[in-house]
Amino acid sequence: MTRMLFREDPYARSAPARVIRVTPEGGVVLDASLFYPTGGGQPGDSGRLEWEGGSMAVATAAKGEGEEIVLLPEEGDAPPPEGSEVIQALDWERRFAHMRMHTALHLLSVVLPLPVTGGAIGAGKGRLDFDMPEAPEDKSTLEDALNALVARDLPVTEDWITEAELAANPALVKTMSVAPPTGAGRVRLIRIGQGDEQVDLQPCGGTHVRSTAEIGPLRLGKIEKKGRQNRRVTLHLAA
Figure (cartoon, one colour):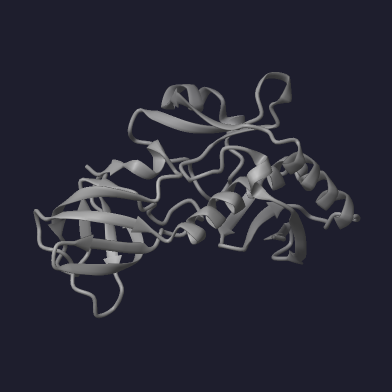
């Protein structure tokens, strides 16, 4: 099992770790990972590993066997030896952009309260697909509503519930295409706002900013038809 440092502190940019094993393909499994593995529409993190006598560029991270996270090297880079001590260094600008966009997409699901059929997160652009037969008439009103939520500087926090509690509250799940991460007996919830100021609560395993103000200005992009009842809504970080 890999300890998920990205979940304990998504703002950590570097950390030590030990190499548990190297896969036959050259992937590196650490005892503790700063690198978020691809999943839930969020790309795996990139960065570097440094150790005495060598270094490796991390192209991305992926889920491995069980609770393992596998760091995949850039082509041509050799992995560190098994058992060695390494320093992990994230491509922080890319990760922070993912955090901002992921939280922004949660807000998009607030201003468009419809079932989500798909989604993808990028460093400057993201999108959600909605079960939405007709496109919204006024994009500027939606964009204003999004930026108003950002400006409210709402706290973004996590809670945990049991899988049984989630099963008893299916309305918490907004995504029709991606099931919440389960199997460990409990499920992580991301909450935006507190008390009477709460605007969103849904299962999510990704990385997020601490406050909506950290997202910065947002720009609503294209709204495209993707099937009889599906509309794809693109969102951009404006700064």
